[in-house]
Length: 145
Image (cartoon, rainbow, N blue to C red; front, side, top):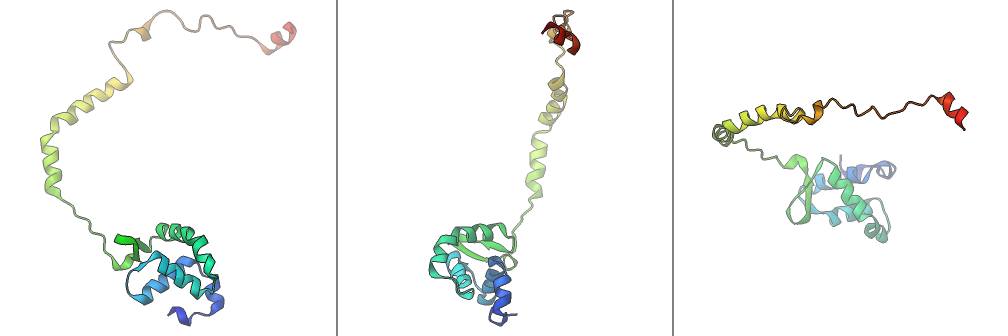
């Protein structure tokens, strides 16, 4: 369905990003954010000053919606038109693991030392840190007042 075929009542109920989706879909090309929002405002018959006061809100809406992607030079387009280029380089990963196998073993051995230090004898002193602690019963405290 084209944007021009949608009744005005339905357009007014739609969010700005939904309208922007139709605009980009119909144009078939990438567009600047300002141009997209101008068309959204024109479609909804909003006043000219509305564009300037709400462009940042529209930017936030577009940048958080996964339907859209921001391209170079401030252009925006539909995510569905752009494939993600994910390159997995297994050879590089294998080389990294082969170069540093000793470091991994050392870190595993040292993990035990994080929680207990065998050389530290201050923890095993016979002096009780709580020996100076006095427990006061609530009833006794009221009597002393």
